[in-house]
Length: 169
Image (cartoon, rainbow, N blue to C red):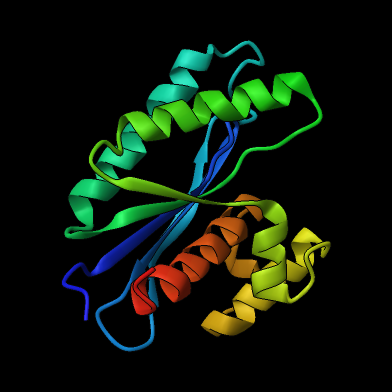
């Protein structure tokens, strides 16, 4: 059995990085915390500098690492992809902010199709099918997810738990 109790996962995005923390103390993982690190809100101007958004991401990662200790030596993330250059650059900025606070932890990535296939059994499934499947797995409703980024982060944490924490890969 692993001595690390908490497992972290992220779905990087500059405007809304989803995160999930699983408590792996017992045989069945429980949700310790999940949410979204908002890089945009209706009260912010549309020209809010990227640095502010990146600082918010870094701050939340610091908080999660301090609050949930000891963490598993792998952190799980969705691998960035996009056919739109600006979107890709924004995702990589968010990812850089995450990685800068995860020094000493190995990052394991899953593609969106791997996540969909593992959780909802359909690699081409919708975000809604992922949310419904992962909600069923954890015995919650989809209303618990503030955004798709949150349900994706929980799905990523579940895959990390199954593939690495319990199987030791």
